[in-house]
Amino acid sequence: MKKTAIVLLCTLGALSARAQSPAGGEAGIDSITDLSPATAEFVKKVAQSDLFEIQSSQLVADKNDTADRDFANRMIADHQKTTADLQGLVRSGAVKAQPPTEMAPSQKRKLAKLNGETGAEFAKDYRKIQISAHKDAVSLFRSYAKDGDNAQLKDWAHKTLPTLREHLRMAKALDKSA
Image: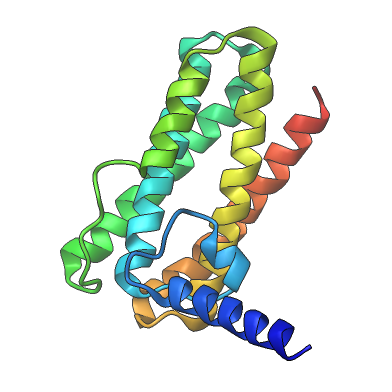
């Protein structure tokens, strides 16, 4: 029993240290720990998420998949807006962090896999990816809106959250229609 308690405490300590590390890890860590990331990490994850959402949704038009086209066009427009909003906060000096211009390696791998697919396989994976990405985004924005360390960014996260929740609802509905 004593050994089990020690192992449990060590595991929890490692998870806590990992969640609080500046690197923050891959998308989804916040949904596991429910800790709010620091401003720089939040900006990084938002920028990478937007890049991934836009580029994966652009594949729908490129692959001429009509069932997902309206959803994809909405994702492109809405995530271009969040990118512009975030860049505006950075340019104004309200946010002291620089958004990255590239996706995370895991996102690049998912995009490459999706790019190689066609037909029903493409549609199934695109929908699955959209659900997962929006679950992570909702968790990230909810956490930052609650406990973020930059008041203007925290307010923006709070205002953006309903749109992300709507995206998740739409992605789930699209997946059920298949």
